[in-house]
Amino acid sequence: MHYTFEIERGNFTDAGQASSSVKRTLKQLGVAPANIKRTVVALFEAEINAIAHAYGGTIDVDIDDQKIVMVVADQGPGIPNLDLAMQEGWSTASAEVREMGYGAGMGLPNIKKNTDDLKIESTVGVGTTVTMTVFFA
Image (cartoon, rainbow, N blue to C red; front, side, top):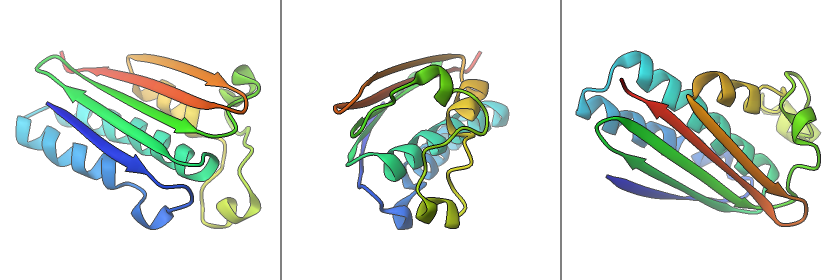
């Protein structure tokens, strides 16, 4: 199964639609609740990061009987220091994003904790691609 979702810059109203849709699909497929939870947390965090920091992008999701692979690709400022960005509490979120309850610096650390494989490719001034895999076995 393959799904594609569009990310619109700053559209927090629709934030979580991709992760909610994937959650429904995984439930219908009978995936274990613990794996659904890990998947939804990781995808929601990546979705919020792209909405808050990038200029738009896409989410591609591939599901088979053994795993889910989620690729969040955005066009944006990129991540200048990935090591720093992976530290809990570090954030470049704007004051506006923080006022909405986002931007606490837990996005990438939460993604890492909830995935079995995580790859982040980022180029400053171009964008970031986050590839997350959760195995069902």
